[in-house]
Image: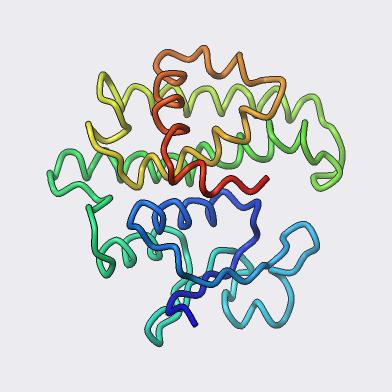
Length: 210
């Protein structure tokens, strides 16, 4: 049996972030246990014992249970061999931390709730709300413009090497790319170039949930 067990919905962007990290580290032998968000399984009594706030992902490794994506990713980056996905340079590390926090606080909600859900799973959010869609696009664009500003002229969001920052954002842009709003967002300065770079990586292709 693999030593790593990952609890999570295949369609979760945060679960994909963890899976991309494992792939970047060369780890293929792990167990993923499905927890279906669309069927309400994260709120089940069983899963609440794993994550008291009813979210995914959850990681079991070496006798320890960890939840919250940032904690999982930082832990795995530390304990697994291979190139680190956390920059050693303090300024690059700060850029990475800014990106991951912006994604968590300002990008995820507008992108998933305001843009992606409107087109791909409106019933899950109570139906199509044009006002929420408009606000979602505005706030998502604001966040993505700022993320590209942080990236500057570098290949990736925190510098010339891929980091956790890119693994946080890539699954969200993958969902945007499935919507009719794709071209509008990819017209943001720098986003299309970054997207081509990241979406061509093996870690991105190997974790495609479709």
